[in-house]
Amino acid sequence: MSVVGWYIHHHGRGHLTRFLAVRPHVDASVVAFSSLPRPESLPPATEWVVLPRDDADEGDGPPSSAAPTAGGALHWAPLGHRGHAERLAAIAARAPVLDAVVVDVSVEVTVLARLMGRRVALFAQPGDREDAPHALGRRLADAIIAPWPASAATGPVASALHHVGGVSRFAARRPAGGRRAGTVLALGGGARDAEWEAMLDAAVASTPGWAWQVAGGDTWLDDPWQALCEAEVVVTAAGQNAIADVAAARARAIVVPRPRPFDEQRRTAELLREHGLAIALEPSETADWPALLERARSLDPRWPSWGIDGAAERAAAIIDRVAAGGAS
Image (cartoon, rainbow, N blue to C red; front, side, top):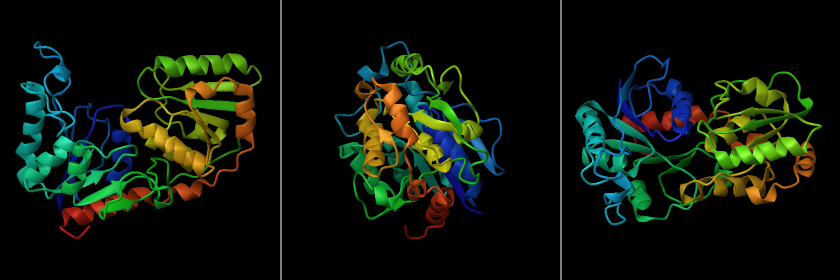
């Protein structure tokens, strides 16, 4: 059996959620590397290695002031940072037994894996990623997995790019029950977001005829499936996993992208608007919530076009093929 390393970035919950959706379909054994705590349950043949943080202040000033981009060649490699060195050393120590490394996401881990002679399956992210570090990562990867459909292709085109569709943890479930008229589910991220919370406070206050359920931050829902299936309208940011889950539930959605590096969420929102899948707008365009909710009620989104069904299996097949040394 092949052995695959899997780097899971610690920002937010999205990279971990995607790992947990795809991992059960991967035939190889997996050694997962992340600064996130070990999940309560993992699939069989999965080891979890907790990495030191590479963004903590170690006493000599913030790592952001220690030339982390190496003159624009990389995204994050702060000089003299012990945690950064230790996390890469932990990955390198296991590299000899790995047949491939899945990277979600880090240019630096991609470079490390290739320098160690390991094959790389790289998860792509939407957005404006024509900078030198992203270009380097793409050149080094044996396969690039794009978790959105080819019909909504965006960003750099590469010969090794595989559009697998939106990866949702709920892909195997089917919507149960009916929509409850006059209900809204607002999905936020795992961290507090003052601007997002202020927007929702204003939305709730201006729509007394609607019943709102707010999830995210301090009111995180581990399994929002039932809420997604029952809400007449879902209000969400434009993260990849959130959109995939909305697509799996076939929900009518208002999508408000949050500020992210490389305009990742803004580009996803633009695609959704272009394909008529959701009402996508900037926070500055959310003044009239009663009108927005009425517009959302009339949506008829063709969510199957987002490619949810089979996406995790397609991603897993690519990973197994790379680990086996097959052509991407």
